[in-house]
Length: 139
Image 1 (tube, one colour):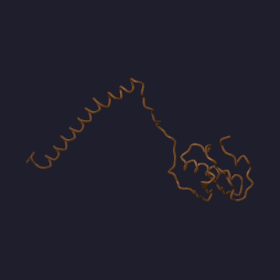
Image 2 (cartoon, rainbow, N blue to C red):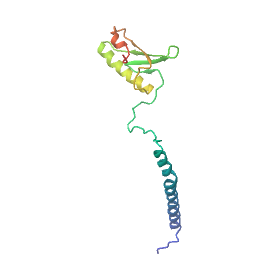
Image 3 (cartoon, rainbow, N blue to C red):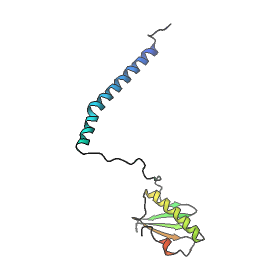
Image 4 (cartoon, helix red, strand yellow):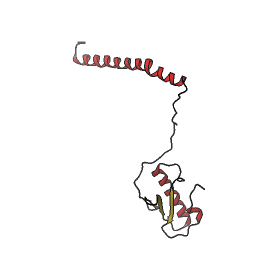
């Protein structure tokens, strides 16, 4: 009844032996090749730079222009400038929409700041916006 010559047992035995062979080769590689090289690097002071566990979050790059109900972001290659047209009938709405547009542009550029970019904010509702909201955050 217990026939060890059945094909399934032969197949299982071959997979088991192959796995043992692969894991043994990996053990020999790490024990005699990889770890000695890593130890020599640390002894010589060549410590590899560690990557942070938590990296800044960035969105997948969207092609410009970015258009929503609250803002429209375009890029002009000639002037190397980003133009942000912001909607809002009151200053409060304008500021909220401007902050959303700023975050969207930072995400699209995968940047933590817009200081190195030329960004021009314009009210699409011809709202009189104080200069403090037209200026860059980098001052």
